[in-house]
Length: 259
Image (cartoon, rainbow, N blue to C red):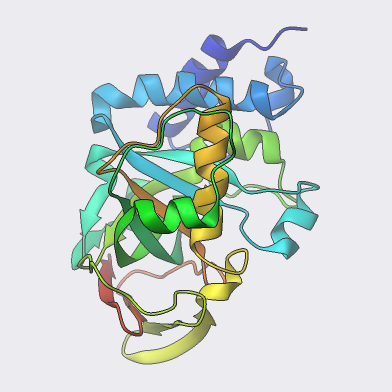
C-alpha cells in the first residue's frame, strides 16, 4: 500500500506529546523503504515547526560501520534540527521532559555557503571549502525505549530521534578533524574517549553524504545551517544530577546538566 505519511506524522506527534514508548511503526503506515520513511519524517517535522521553530540544520546518525551493519544499511541517516533545539553549553535539561534521554558526543559544523542541488556529486573537497566553523556538541536524543535491533525506517521517520544540539563555541580554524580526540567527562571523571575518525573516517564525510542526499531530493544545504556529524563514542543515558562535559582537543568544550 502507499505510504500514509500525513497520518503517520500526526500519530508520531501525538506519541511525542504523550511521551509514549516507541513501537516500530513505519511499516504499519505503508513505509516500505527509506524514501517513504523520509516522507513521514517531513510530515512530523512540519507539525513540530509551530512548536519548535524553523529548521536550523541537520543531525546525522548511523555513522559507524557497526551501527550500519546492525541496521542493514550502507550509509548514514539524517534528521532535522529545529530552532528551539539548537542550545548553548551550560543548559539544564530535565530527563522527565522526554521518554528516554540519551547523549551523543559529536563535532558540529557550520555551513558557510549554499550547497544547492547539482548533477555532480559533492566531494570532501567541496565540504572542506563550504564549512566555515566547527564546534563540540552534544546531541540530545530520545530513543523512546526503542527495542533493538533498530528498525531503521521507524528511526528515520521519527526524525532520527533528535531532541537537541548543545553547542560549545564555534571556531573558524581547526586541527585535522580525523585525528582530534574527544573526551567525555561525567561529574568530573573522564569516562570515554574517541577520535574524529570514528565517524566514517572524518567528520566531513557524513556532511558529504548529507549534501548529496539533499541534492538528490532537490534540496539545498544552506549557509548558516549546522550539521551534527555523528558520535565519536558510545551513547550515554544520564541520571538526574549528572553533569557532562565533552572536550574536543584543539576546538573546545561543551557542558550539559541533567535534572
